[in-house]
Length: 84
Image (cartoon, rainbow, N blue to C red):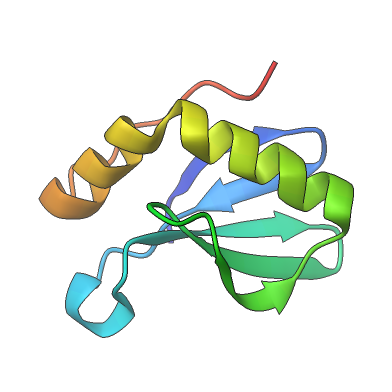
């Protein structure tokens, strides 16, 4: 699972086996926490994250939604900037 970015102790990754992992989402690792967040709806579909980490991850996903969907649809991996 390639790493797309990391910031504030969080690592954002994405699987590249779309058909097995729809809807489009990213995986957020934060210490011992892990959550899968859907790119379109920002819903956490599995796992758990502390509220502050979840809010920062959602802010970052919103900022890079178009790029993330492009990565998901083309499976052309690129690194993205962190949340600042």
